[in-house]
Length: 312
Image (tube, rainbow, N blue to C red; front, side):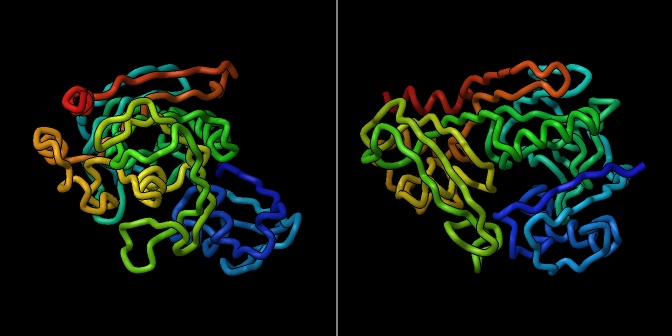
């Protein structure tokens, strides 16, 4: 039987297109949502409507999600650093360079392929993202929770949607004029010209809020603890870049600052990273079965820690 999800439209959804609203609520691609709508898996007030339907207050959206065909995804013996595992979930300490889930033209070599190899049971409530409740960028390392069954998946996803999950990152950013702590509250959307980039505002932008705390200051950098209130694509990278403090080692949003580092040994170390200095170090959420709060920590990878030692 297909799974059933019901969403009651509140004041924020009024006037939005149906497909846009579901994209915000479910963190699914618009192409997949449009496919669901066209194939009749999405009903509005118990009737079929088009993707462009403009929502009204108290509209009831019902999504019947059929189990996806994951047999086309091949299990692969990709090494995974498993921090925790039980019948409901797995917590992975993801290595940099690993894409989380398959995408266009990228059906192998992802975390999902590794999950299918290592675990007999994994949730299948996402189309080509079995188990994946939330994501990390390819070159961001650190903690990521994976669901092993559909019930756990939906309960965990609900916590992320309702912003009940505590996520903490460690990062090194260019610049020294940051205040000791602060918040960046600026919507993020797709860049109008560069499809691989996100930007403040942009196409179909959505609210995004980031909190930062300076843990240590150096002559050209600040080492930060960052907390996310939302989980937008590239959020920390976009937000820090928007205030003139891009993340060290970030080729997409770095604004060429890595090449301007005065300390030669640090500049070379950053250039040799091949990734941005961004690590998901802490994760706290409610266990989907026991309802206990569980928390996990991950140490800064050695090559990132080595750069801090050079700066000291």
